Length: 243
Image (cartoon, rainbow, N blue to C red; front, side, top):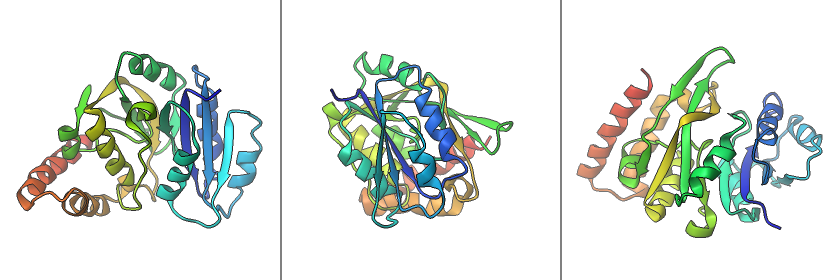
């Protein structure tokens, strides 16, 4: 019997954090899921740590060479069999009731559900990231309101959506999903924790800005005027998030 939730976790050299990330999924109050862990040719002890878990809900996959996060996630998406697809990176965390709360909302008819979440540098420094309760495609063009670690979508209704190997690959994926679903529901309770590290996108604002402009112009093929309109909103929303 196929699982209800498929959880996709790419891993590359995450020996310091992957155990906590896996445990945060295994500790979910709703247990009908499979966790697809894709080891993207790690060179540290990540593989040994992953294989040390003895849980039949874990599906281990690996790449033949380091291919990047989009490729790793796509490998998991291709192999998963659940109704709903969710994501967690190997340095982030879920709170225990994440899947339970989202399933309840999915069962009311929404095909895409996300939640608010915390960002943190360490376990004593948390910042709440909030999004509108209803997120549309148009509003997503103004800011990435779906944190990838919180989003889940109905693959039976929408189909499997794969990621492109570009900057903001998760954002482009959620845009495509919203084009098909029409809207997403954001649970206002924080249900996950996003770790900000020196290597995370949140720590490199200039790179994020360049990627965002490239998405408007090169991926979505928006006109200069529309690109400027949405880009201005993107910058304003970025400033609001830093408050």
